[in-house]
Amino acid sequence: MKTLKFVRRWRNAVKWMRRNYRVILTVLVYIFVAILAFGCSHDVASVLAMAVPGIIVGGTDGGKHVADGPLTSDLTRDASPSLLLNEIDQQIVKIRPMATPLDQLSRYGGGKHAGSMIVDYYNVDTKPTSTTVSETYTEGDDVVAGSGTPKVRLVTNNDEIFDTSDTILVQGVQGYEPDGSTMSQQELVLYVASRDATNGLMVMAVNGKTVDGVANCLPTINEGVTLIRMGRAASELDVMSPQFEALPHKEQNFCQIFKMQVEQSTLQRLSNKEVGWSMTDQEEAAIYDMRLGMEKSFLFGVKSRLWDPAKKENIMLTGGIWHQAGKQFAYSESTISRDKVIELMREAFTGNSGSKRKVLLGGSRLMGYLSNLDYDRVVMSRESVSKWGIDFTEIRSKFGTLYLLLSEVFDECGMSENGIIIDPEYIQKYVHIPFSTEALDLKSSGLRNTDALVLTEASCLVLRYPKSHMRIIRR
Image (cartoon, rainbow, N blue to C red; front, side, top):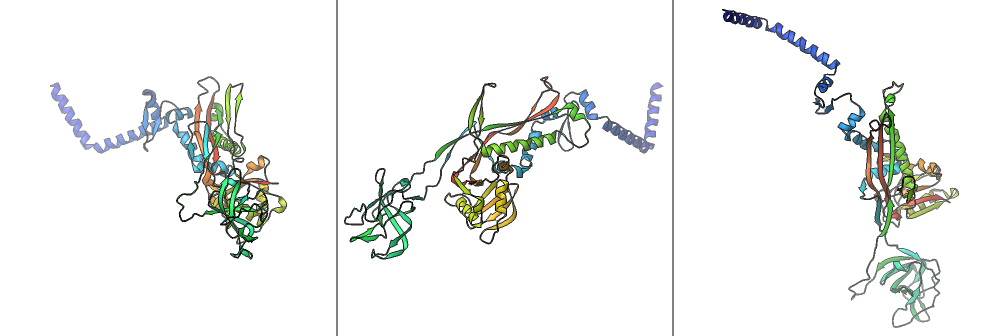
């Protein structure tokens, strides 16, 4: 009997649910919505995490959320240590790039990894093409007459740039017509017969003068006359030629460890603030200050190794590129003119096989002098051009293009009238420790109740082909 009554009641209940299924569904929906609202206001994820320690709840976007307590910077760095690092790496070149142009250029160019704090590198400059006469040669002296063209001894300030079979253009000294008595419109050309360490150059004149019946003698060549090395000239039976040597010159620089520490106390973080000022804002300000200090070291630093008796450690200091530049251009305020700018650009772009686009970083007074000049079609000035995340003023000439930018670092270092021309193609950054961040756990160590972050980079700058870079100084 009891079994029959239970079966009868169950059938009645099923019939009632079938008749009222819409009401039942509506009630269930309301209950579900109420549960969701309650869960969102009371952090269901945290409740679940407390029930199951270390739980990771998947987000709708595929992200991961650590839910073993309130989300803090410490938990963020523990759970996702690359989060802050990636943000800083992506943003560092965007933090006030105009204030640190040298550091900006080096970061855009990419750093080469250095396996040591000491960087050895090699420079190769192009072989010089000219020198000057060091001893006056007087017409008719030291003539060795023979069956052919006479050979004479010529002493220069750099005999090493010449070799046997080279031809030399004697600048400013006129040659002669084939008759040997009529002066030619062409300059005198010499042929190098031989060269040795004691006798200097033994040369023969190509279009020389006839003296006492001897053809192709050298006319007088005064001390200081410029000699320009030209192409080699071989005879029909010559198979070989003197070897060309270009040996690189070894240089060395030290990577310097640049550091900056940012801290924020827990109370500071929790306190209400009149304006939004967070740890991220402090990090940005610290990065800017760190880059500004690196800019000065990269420019004017002195390569050295210091022993700190307190730390009982060596401190490596990097050498700046100011003294690495292979050229120097001097000017005075009274000589600044359009012609002087053309001379500057000629010096910057010739004789170094560098690129035809270079950067001029200078102090405020130098920029003022250049800004006050009148430009024309020969030397043209444009308002601005954007390169490497920086806005430059562009000056064009027949020699090349200069990108001008004020660098307040020169002003801060007392060099407002000086500047440096850099060839971006031949500047190299070596990085031993890439720019990185590290969270310090000062709370657990019992030092301070703060969130602490240390920014670190160990790097140095070197100039390839030093003669493609030039210092500008005021006399």
